[in-house]
Length: 383
Image (cartoon, rainbow, N blue to C red; front, side, top):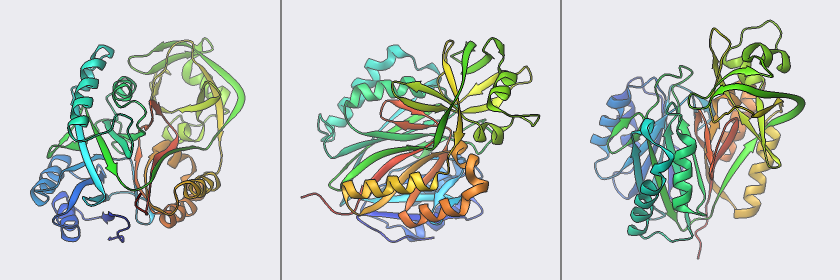
């Protein structure tokens, strides 16, 4: 359950059967004082409001933030039906939080107001205009379908500050996800955490999809609902199945995870994950789509070696890594889980990766899918 503390971050996992028991177990091993914040990744098997109340009662002097998941990245790699908690020492971290509620009504014109509030709160707590020694971490309701506009507002407010995060999940139900802040669990909300630290850090993103030659053009879509009803002027589900080479089988989350589609922005390809299909063949996506968008069919590469290479590159850049906070697409996990679950879990265990599986990943100003995205925190304080 308990991981050793390196450079002021303590990682804890519990698989207790109830929300109250889980909170009690976390409180029994985490320090009672001297923490800047506790970050939790919580399986949807726990009652969200009960868990929030139990954590608030036990951590009276420490703010608790977090989100629900579609699986956890824990002490021994991929896990589920658990809570992963990261406790940040006040000796190494300062944490400033800004919450945003009512995301269903959030519009582009709200950018300036939200941006000004974030900047004022950040500078009031000693932030630097260039984000030096700071990084942002955003947790957002994964069912709100407002990630892009919220990210735009935050990116405008924080400027060059590194920013990562994830869309809270609800297992594979896609019904209701929760974000924890202010002593409660919230839907239709987000919380931005700004970490200021003397430790080296680096944000990262790793995509293991390989583009093929087959293309599909979105010829009918509803951007507000993130749905596509026609591809290449044909019913979307049937055309997707044909182009992706899915013969006969049911279109479900496993099929979507195993047969991703990409969009090209500049010279880079980004995954657009499909969540579900309606009876009429309409496809529901996890991130922004629009009419005229060109999808490229993709294949999945074995993620073990690319991810291992990424970890090696990060260590070369910032030295010994204390831990990685990771937000991994549930589609990425499902697409390869049956092939290399032991290898991935061992890789994550060996490199001390902690986090959760998400409905979407946040990287700088981008809301993306199909990746492992996060922040690596070094173990040697800057002088």
